[in-house]
Amino acid sequence: MRRSDADNRAIGGTLNLNSLWSKLGTFSISYNDDRRYNSHYYTADYYQSVYSGTFGTLGLRAGIQRYNNGDSSANTGKYIALDLSLPLGNWFSAGMTHQNGYTMANLSARKQFDEGTIRTVGANLSRAISGDTGDDKTLSGGAYAQFDARYASGTLNVNSAADGYINTNLTANGSVGWQGKNIAASGRTDGNAGVIFDTGLENDGQISAKINGRIFPLNGKRNYLPLSPYGRYEVELQNSKNSLDSYDIVSGHKSHLTLYPGNVAVIEPEVKQMVTVSGRIRAEDGTLAG
Image (cartoon, rainbow, N blue to C red; front, side):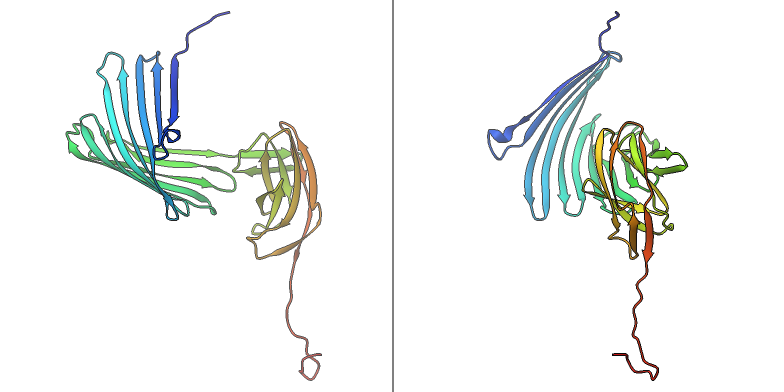
């Protein structure tokens, strides 16, 4: 049996100073030793809650980072920032960092959405305000978006670094369920088992599946919903609150499933669209019928 030393060692901890005095925050420290590249990385960080109330929460972050690569001299960075979290998924941060002999002002913002394909958008901007930047750019920044579509979910990043290079990165995840003649895709990756719903609805038709108390939208003719294996699931089909149409689920209204790794169950309910007709009945002479 062969045995070799680990290439990387890391240790860290967090101390909640609030237990000593209610007005204090948390202090964190970490150390990383990369033996393969002969580098060392130290961080110390302090977070203090400043305000928490109806209008949101405000926190103060301050810390120091020290990096040493091989025989080169150590590089030390310092930072301080105010983080503001607002209602409705809004977040804003402003602060300063000092590294490589110059100081930069930093701004970051993020917005989250409960509905729609785009779930999170964010951006950050940094500008040198003092010191000599050398070959580095005085302005850098980036933006990103997290999306959750019917067949894929992921993140798109665009970043302009201080060295002037622009990097773009797209990650997308999804899953496919296949059972006999039924095949469907999903942007979710919750597990390696799942359920295919063959509802037979038109492309714009929508109902909902209530699975163990959670609501999942079902759009169009066929949907795949990945689920965790070794679970027992109670599935109930119902009308969607987001749809103007109403459906009568004639059969397959409720199901009970137990899924194992690789299992794909198929639920084929009989669904009929209900049409509501409103009006007034008149007699032959044109008067309203009693």
